[in-house]
Image 1 (spheres, rainbow, N blue to C red):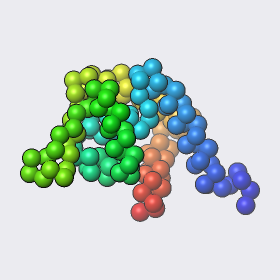
Image 2: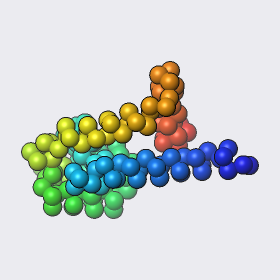
Image 3: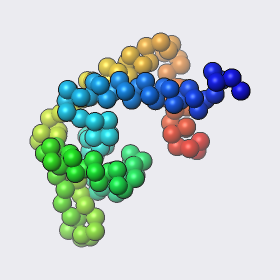
Image 4: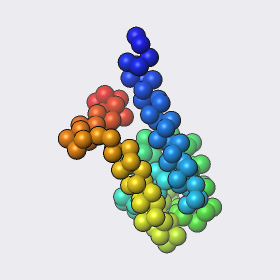
Length: 139
């Protein structure tokens, strides 16, 4: 197979390009891409448990704990045990974490617009659907 026809190679290169650019654009806000992902999960629905965030973002336990540690040190989130089940930890945005939303969403929206710019309007929905299918493991 010619490497130009290899979906795995193309997706890997696309990921490198997009991830690197998002990393560069988030740096002035003091965030990494995984930190942005966790904050976006909380902006979507605040007060999730760490297990709910892990499931929503498809992150492993060690990764999400490390990201939450750094976000908590930066005073962007707080964590507290769930009263009815102390094994669970509920994660909440702080005022500082909530205040980042507009700036960070503007950054991400701008990058999304740039990425999709070469595509015709009728190509965008199928592209997003295809990427979601791949991300779900083909399901």
